[in-house]
Length: 102
Image (cartoon, rainbow, N blue to C red; front, side, top):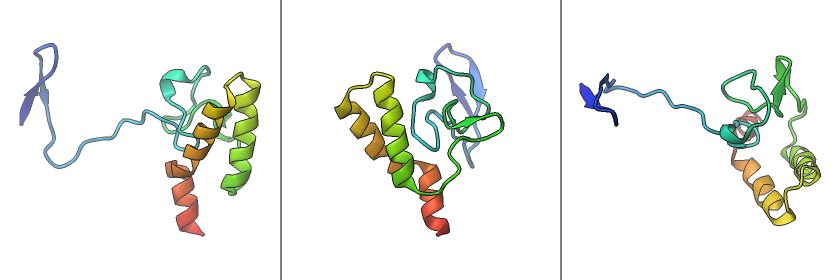
């Protein structure tokens, strides 16, 4: 099956599956286009994963949310936006997996 891209070029499409491109961090949902650092992996931002391991070692989403909220406030994000982003962390794929494994 062939499809045309925006430039008119032909591209092969797989009719059985498509690979999902990650656009947000699996742990904190930060958009990758706003990540100021250099990412080590395709799934996590530079804040959540660096030096080959996750920066948060625990499995408590409330503790992670509190830590993330404090860091956002230190970086100058206003409190309503920081609260909203913190709320959204609970829906991240990483935390859904942790919840299922309990």
